[in-house]
Image (cartoon, rainbow, N blue to C red; front, top):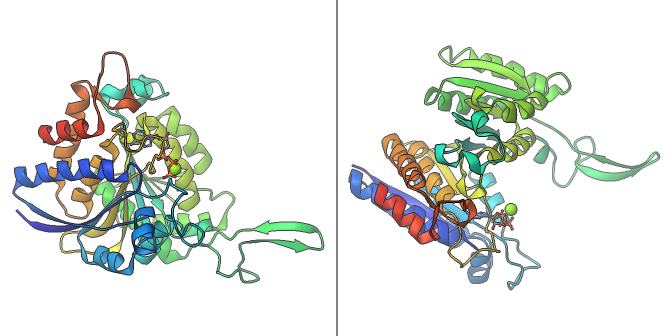
Length: 370
Ligand code: ATP
Ligand code: MG
């Protein structure tokens, strides 16, 4: 029995539709386990630009900092709003990730038993897959430059005597590598106790340092099995033998590519949740932002077709990582599995023999199963 505050940022497109269902399921958890969840709902994305002139207000950011966790829908997808030349909805994501230092992006991939045929990978290869990619989110190639670009440390396209050239900098500090490795080992302790560190140490200096730090951190977790894997080999093993992985930890660019690849194992975009964690501790765990991996899906917004399961499983991750409520998180996962097992599907998972229901009905079925 506990009291928790959650900042809710539904956003645009299908964001509000799927977030509403996640809250319905959280309310079912609250009543079953006698918790009190207090939601503070704020605008983000186009919705915030239209009402407040910015993609996320400082007041909303401050509220995020003070809460136990943040539940996020999606932003963007519309180009017809006032102020579109000055403000972009994606600025909200940048402000949240950089401002709150959410450096660890967690993406679990666990294809459901009754959905194995929804993936393009053979069911016998997928059977038993349960992996988690831990991607470094605030460093590496995407941030390894100074703004504005400074000679010697640039990310720019420039003219030289040899013609036009482009340069990006892949920069990691030892401290940045260490903190993401620690997240991976900590979460592995809660899982199958295996970490695969992915790099390109045969070519890149940043990967050589990554490997050194990984070895040092691994020595502190003797109870967790540990291996290194080159990123190209990892890409291959992900679809050849996905069951060989538990936790995969890697830098920003490799993680970006590998998580898109891994997401296809589960069948639909509408199935995959994510967590972004930082260093800020809360009374119950670590402050985090939880969101489906999909975007605002303007093509299906307002039609009741959106699959809310990614948002609902994101709420389960919120319970697990920020509130420390692991039984409650498992209860949501079990409720999702049961609902799928009973044959209920949203439009994106249409298959012979399934009962097609809308966004709201799916939320209600899962809440009832909880
Ligand atoms: P954004 O610009 O916000 O990222 P997008 O146009 O890239 O939006 P996504 O949200 O990434 O669109 O979705 C890509 C495709 O996947 C769309 O055709 C969308 O309908 C489908 N899709 C995404 N999420 C879901 C969902 N939860 N349920 C069903 N289909 C989805
Ligand atoms: Mg998109």
